[in-house]
Image 1 (cartoon, rainbow, N blue to C red):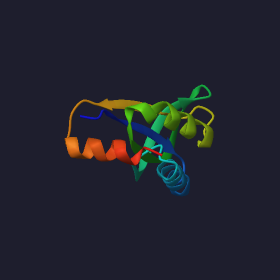
Image 2 (image 1 turned 180 degrees about the vertical axis):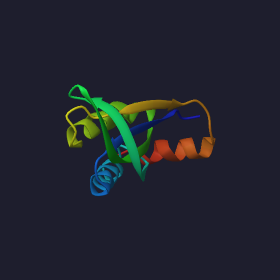
Image 3 (image 1 turned 120 degrees about the vertical axis):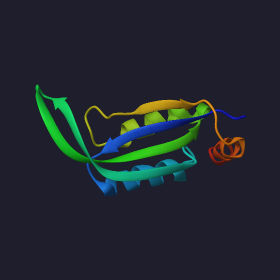
Image 4 (image 1 turned 90 degrees about the vertical axis):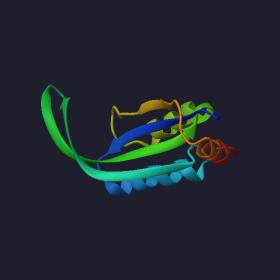
Length: 106
C-alpha cells in the first residue's frame, strides 16, 4: 500500500484557504485538499493570548511529496510563523492511497 500523509494548516480568510488548496492540487503537490471552518483559535502571540477566527486546510499527499508541499505552504502562507502539521497515515483504503499517489505524480 502506498504511504500517504495529511498536511494541515490554518489561515485567517476563506479566500486564502481556497487559494492554498487550489494551488497545491494544481501543482500536483496534493491529490486533494479540504477547506473547513471557520474555527475559533486561541494562542499565544507577542506575549499575550489572542483569539481569532481561522479556516483550516487539510491536504492529502503521498509521503514523497510532503517536503515539497510543506515548502509550498510555507512560502504561500500569510502568517509569520504558519502552523504546518504533518501526519503519516498508518492504514486506510488501499485504493484511496493508490489514488493519492497517482494524483501527485507529474
